[in-house]
Image (tube, rainbow, N blue to C red; front, side, top):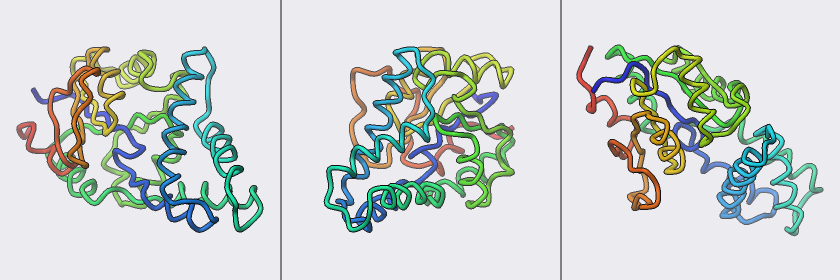
Length: 223
């Protein structure tokens, strides 16, 4: 069924975080520590949301990075190392499959938006660098929902902001926890599985699975 609006997660779904590993290496840390740090950012944001707080993605990311790098023999002062890594988040590219897929969806008349646990300004600069900002109708952030995904409040906020019933929205995400949260709130879902891994059986299953954003146009008929 053709959705009224396609809602994209941003971090790792659209953005390619692999360059952050080089930033870790540049300051004297292990490149592989980047993925553990980002997973910790998500964990801490989820925990704060459950506790009733209103976490800022930027604040959680910074504090988690300070904690991670403080245990490493760095080649520069800790504060400089933290700033070097964080600066890389403002220069990330999109995945190679994103631009062609987004352009094809827009040309077929789909309404496209983002819903991120990060700031809308981060999504804005990411899409502008990729040359596809004009393809998106709205850039939403859970900062306005006062709860991180996968809290039900985040998806409720998106439906209210877009003026669309949940059953007419399709969430596209690389994270199974996001797919699960959206599914439980009545959204249709598409899991982006770039790695070829298995989907965790403890989560609600996606309605469809693709290996890249460029496969999405084939899921729905033209307008």
